[in-house]
Image 1 (tube, rainbow, N blue to C red):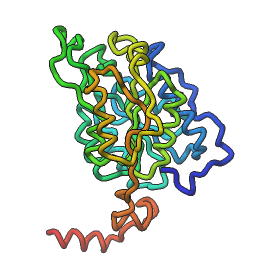
Image 2: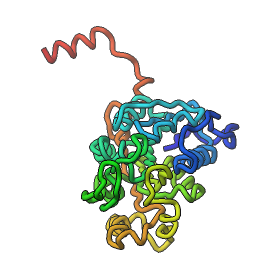
Image 3: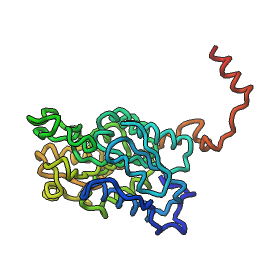
Image 4: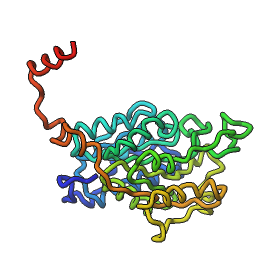
Length: 298
């Protein structure tokens, strides 16, 4: 969420790009995600020193390097714990997590559930290319059944994870899906996710042009469509129904846009210590107070 201290200022239309040459393959969907995130930050005009981008491991881990904000690469699947630690310590930060489907929905899947149910005020952008790209093409948690990869040469026999239904069911209060082939639409989803007070997740259909020859840009363009005003994002049951449309249509129809939004208190607003102010601004306990705590639990 954008706080009062982070309202648009003189930097509002300055690019947040670092100028570092991207390491992604030409045509990788992550290029579009980087452009969309930059556009979202430019429109919000948040002070660069008030933004932290946290990444995990995978192709998406290059994202913090593309921005002239604070950034950090965490361990595989552990970007959310690091992101929430930063947010709880310094609530004035706008914290954005950037990961992939393997990092976020595989090894990091357990963290996703608990970040969502706690309604931590961070934004999570997941580049979902339905493959492990950095390790050159193994099946991921979102790979389609039958997909032939290096780890599933005879076709994937596992049912794919639906990240949208998982996030909605776990308690996320802003759930959206974008497409790397439409960066302007994606930028709006990311901007609104950052502005939302609570846990926001944007699942991005981000084609891997090197190792996923099934889910290509053309394949997605034949299937994606934007949710219109007839969809009520405050209706949880309706959001779940739309999120299930991919499976129920045998992946012939893939809606993108805002699926679900709900306003409720965040973790920081309910925690008796954090709601008094950012931890970094609170006084350190004295030596005597620390000894009293230690003595209490001897």
